[in-house]
Image 1 (spheres, helix red, strand yellow):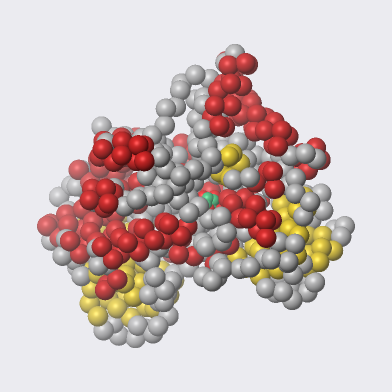
Image 2 (cartoon, rainbow, N blue to C red):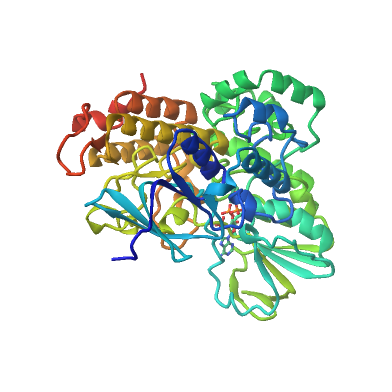
Length: 562
Ligand code: NA7
């Protein structure tokens, strides 16, 4: 038995990023007593931690913001097409102030465990500050990219100089002037930071394991006329985004790249490249993520741009992705990334040709040389999606740890709940569109769904809600089936858990699209939480809610939105 819980709450929310903040606002409005715990010292989640140089959103500012408050979206002024981390963090702070959120957020506090007590149908939630509270519901609003991953390289702790992970960057910044800097990792964080570090450092060595596809961001100050026009039509724009495949408006032509006239195709790829848009090239044809031959056409187009930009053909080739289809790892948006490798003070080390053997006190030893360094930057990413959830010791019914249940990969119903863990919800969890979408759109949809669900339970006098195993099995099967119709599972991506040694290879996000997914979730709610079991009494097995789905009705076919 843990320490006795001294506070009784309706809801504990773990995390005060954009999910936790909106959750708190909604729960408070609806009269649920709520405590938010946040490991950081302030709000902002991913934007609180990721302060590395060049950190910037790759969804356009006017889309990457809350839509729930029309006044907020009218009053806030974004300055650039793609917001910098400081501006997004300022926005998060503005929202926290405006809605007076901080009173119910306990900062500098990490939730360590959450244990479900079947006798009381409540969660006992403990923190690293020695506090234990009792809550009817727990919502994991922990983000998808918040558990940082160090490079798995021998000697990593022996380096004599300072080391920094992009996802835990010091608040006071880092001055690289006159330093010999090494950056390990060329995902989005590496690609955003490398051009700026190169401008400051005496010398920069980039250690690249997998070259990534990156496109120019074409970032610029926002045009006042565009902002006026968008604000005038914001409601309609948001509504359309909510029902789109990825939560931003895209015209995805049905035409196939493999059937297009080569000159027209080249021109369309160029337009996509010049658009400065994450989906610029990816959305030029309908078959790029479905047909390997179509994908290769887009991949080769991007490799051609790399050859155009990079002076040294050998470096251009080393920077050219060839081991995964375009778009199956999240493509990056950059400002001057490839051109950085034309600088005299920048060296690229292709780790496929010469792998890192160890990190030494003096630098990095590869199979063919020792690179002496003063500073090391780890842009090595995250234990994505499941890492932050499993970082809390969650124990459900029958004493089952979630870590055990998910040992072969996450199993959820709708990415919102998992069987055996009553009254536990995840925001943008595995099995939901999440990281494949504009996160703001997905966050708001999940928060609205969860809070509506809590209201429905309150109205019905229900004390617990739990996904059925049948519904969960059906959903997991559906998520896998849809993913396998695409090229997405082919890459060793963090979507697959492939970046973390030993992590099960499962394609975690739902590729069905946010519009369809929203309809499916709404249908489940309309059918009195189809696929969930609710209990009106503390005694299990009694008083099941009125509308129990037949086991067969909750599989993927039973989930067709109508
Ligand atoms: P990512 O995209 O996971 O990138 C991490 C990078 O670090 C990637 O290039 C990895 O190579 C590399 N890496 C990881 N471990 C090692 C070791 N041990 N040795 C060498 N290289 C390594 O993380 P980011 O922070 O850049 O971006 C995460 C998301 O944030 C991004 O997708 C956007 O959605 C925003 P690998 O590809 O695994 O071979």
